[in-house]
Amino acid sequence: MEKTEAVAALGALAQDNRLDVFRLLVQAGPDGMPAGAVAEALDVAPNTLTFHFDRLRAAGLVTVRRDGRSMIYTAQFETMNALLGFLTENCCGGAPCTATVGCKPARKRAKLPA
Amino acid sequence: MEKTEAVAALGALAQDNRLDVFRLLVQAGPDGMPAGAVAEALDVAPNTLTFHFDRLRAAGLVTVRRDGRSMIYTAQFETMNALLGFLTENCCGGAPCTATVGCKPARKRAKLPA
DNA sequence: TCCATATTTCAATATTCGTTGAATTATGGA
DNA sequence: TCCATAATTCAACGAATATTGAAATATGGA
Image (cartoon, rainbow over all chains, first blue to last red; front, side, top):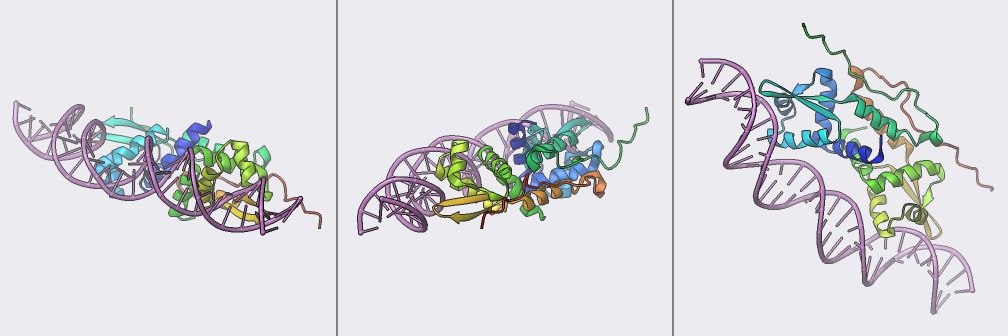
């Protein structure tokens, strides 16, 4: 990960509502959550939430897809892991001090009935 | 680490100059670096740098001490590690997925000749 | 004491950020 | 088609941010 991307990701997470949103999406796992459900869970106005989703998306921390009337937002674990990697890059004099820095979803995405 | 502290630490690192400063101090290790040396290394105006040091300090990411005319800034590894811990807290459904997320200085502080 | 160095303080400024309210777009169902 | 739901867009606003230049403070040495 480049420094510019790291700054973007850090900035995206450096805000109360957005940190809450991201953590909620991480817990939701690969299936993601509709915007409305996030708004209700965190008690944030829908338009405010759109603003924050945009920033998270710009930083590559979430993706969206439409499902009917709902927009489903999903956490991007790869970006988060890349950020963790970047942050530990300079530790311990360059030696990889953390054997495995990595975040993965709690459960596999349920295979949808074809 | 509390959410409020995490937001503060993330915000402190979410800026080009400050991220550079912090990484430089991490590489400098426990002995730290005088403000002037940081200013020269990164080509940032001294007063601008003071502003950024203040933010890093407010977030607990650095400490200062005076040495003669110089102010020596030092990275706080504990805070960085606490932040990494916080960020990985929600991964993997609550299970501690990263055996050892931790950053430690490259070399021990050189014992000054008494 | 006087001077140079190292750093901070302060005011000013342009920019970005987070939130709100009103209006708009997109989708699905009656 | 008409309506309700889900979410976004837009303009506006106050608050916070990052940088600059000028002035001030602290320390050490001649």
